[in-house]
Length: 456
Image 1 (spheres, rainbow, N blue to C red):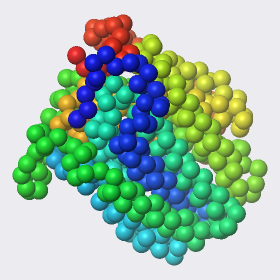
Image 2 (cartoon, rainbow, N blue to C red; image 1 turned 90 degrees about the vertical axis):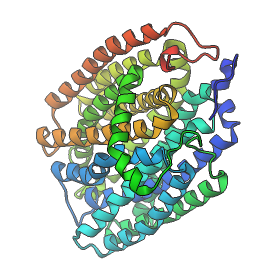
Image 3 (cartoon, rainbow, N blue to C red; image 1 turned 120 degrees about the vertical axis):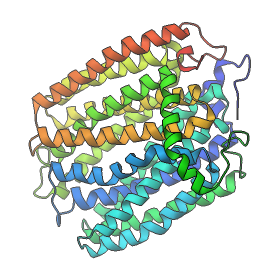
Image 4 (cartoon, helix red, strand yellow; image 1 turned 180 degrees about the vertical axis):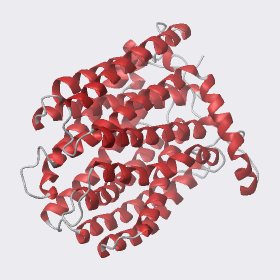
């Protein structure tokens, strides 16, 4: 595992220094190729519900779709972490994508046929579960390919370029639907089938880029024993992971504040989807809203890209906890200023600000988990974080489905969400700031990393 180099220069945080790490470049390539496939596959699934003239869906149906795809895996997410700390992460990364390659094709066939059946949903659950397994494995493997003092920038790039790759996949699928294929079950089935090629390419790239033990877990810390024993250790391992995270106060606070952010974000996400499909849709069919929602995805992508550039230097200068507090306040202000007029152009500003904040918080949270948590617990704590990440989003969407009208236009709901972001900022500013000062946030590390992000 890489360690901090004594007397390292702050310049090592910058992009070029991170990209000089061959292992990081390869791991980033594995992630980007797979997430283009994710964009194609999940975009096709969403399109069959949101933009298909052959099938209409309201707010509750949209929330239910997210729940079907996210909740089952989220409930077993912490258990997956035990295996992330037991099995070679290169094996997890390559085999998860190989399995997804095999499973996507029958899902595409079911979409093509257009029949209502639980089978494609069940298969989609497995594909989505493997995706979270894959992403958690990448996060746990990152400290093995970059020096510890470069994790802020490494997380910034991997998370942001991964999200942008996902957007590229969605955008590619949307462009094909609008220009070459039809807005129908057949068109979405072909887009879903394309994802299989990207999953296969990612699997082969991961397999050929690293040696068997290069991505961890470290041999001295790897748990031995049979699969039966591993299953028996799941509950104890998960409890141990929760206790380990609870003992790392700075990381635990960030997981909590990110969970609150996702809860509120779920309401905003559903409101935006409904608004762009109804109030801002100038056509006669739900598929006519495709272009306006694509603009929202573009605005979100720009926000995430900007977050990847500004988060590392700002976190180094003012401390991660101050930056998280600031973006929470900015999100609340953006929702009030850009969201309440219910103008399609102004709302893009709210989408931009919310996406920037989401990515900034994720970068700081991932970095804190990697810095503070021991390698033998990393798989578990990242799985716990992923579980909270997904459950809170779905919970927020259900809250939105219960409180928003069919059009998504509700000044009262958006005002409450904005106030929630401000209150979350105030609470984290007190708790996170108190902990950061306790561990010496004002004392910079030799490499410029804020001490608030480093375990003491």
